Length: 148
Image 1: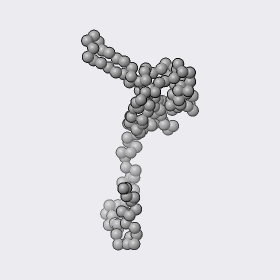
Image 2: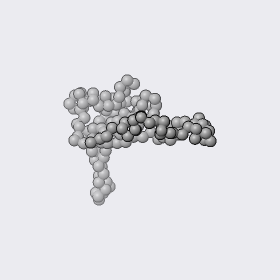
Image 3: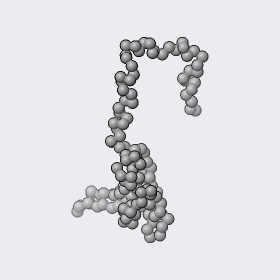
Image 4: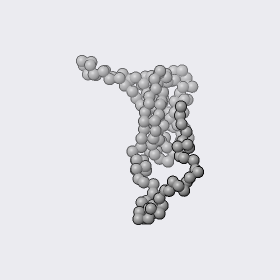
C-alpha cells in the first residue's frame, strides 16, 4: 500500500424494475485515507461524510497530484473552501465503514511468546499462584472501576 492510497466510495442507486435495461443514478461519494506510514492499510472503523452527486473530476485531478505530506481528506477540505462551482455539496448522510488489512491478521493470530520460552511444563507447580502470599493486597475486583 502506498502512502497516498485512499478509498473513493462512489454510491449509485440501481433500479432493476425499469423495463429497458437498468436505471443507475449517482447518489453520492466519500473519501477515506487508508494508508499508514508503515505500508499497511489503516484498519479500523470510520464515519465519513457523504457528498451529493458523482465524484467530481477536479477531486480526481487533485488526488493524482497529491503531495506526499497531504492527505486525501485535506484535499476535500480544500475543495470545500474553494470556488463555489467546484465545492462538493455535503449531504445529510454519513457512511460508516470498517476497514481491515487482511495481511495483518497473522500479526495478531500468532502467540507473542515462543512456547519454549515459557519454561518446562513439568516445573509448573513451582510457579503456581498462591493466594495466601498476597494476603493484605487489594483484591483485583477493587481495582476495576464500576459503572453506574
